Length: 198
Image 1 (tube, rainbow, N blue to C red):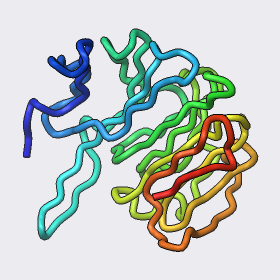
Image 2 (cartoon, rainbow, N blue to C red):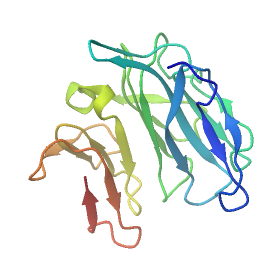
Image 3 (cartoon, rainbow, N blue to C red):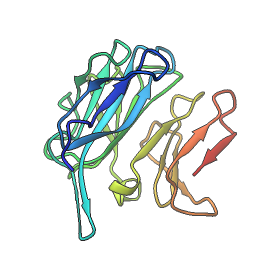
Image 4 (cartoon, one colour):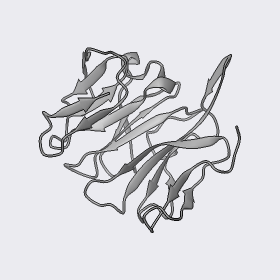
């Protein structure tokens, strides 16, 4: 349903009241919200235009985008047109920031030229580092990416399998947890060997 109640809302009084701080359009909702672990004023978000009915699925369109805030989410800049990111229709996207170096950011983007993109300057310029279908199949169902808390070159993507890269996203090794269908990942900040996968 199209509604102006989409977007990101912020509370500064413990949740008593809320203010809408990011609104792409009435068709696109927010699907990822990431805070820079080293600077809580810097945040990244993704919005996604999707329609699913009992008989159809449409992923992508106006409002699907990546966003950056440098003032604790009060204002946002659309960074989807930044150098190196794909042109054309976007679908869902996920984003993560390396706790080792805040300038290192990864995004996984649903697009005709989609895949894993990396920035080493805080999102100003991007390079596509991997376009493997195994990382982005059934994008509407997955599309999550996670930076290792202690190694700047380690990044994870969850999908039908879960995938780990040790070279900044260029190559990935794939594995499966006992349940399959990997949707979420938590990595202990003080010990990246301790993980929870959902």
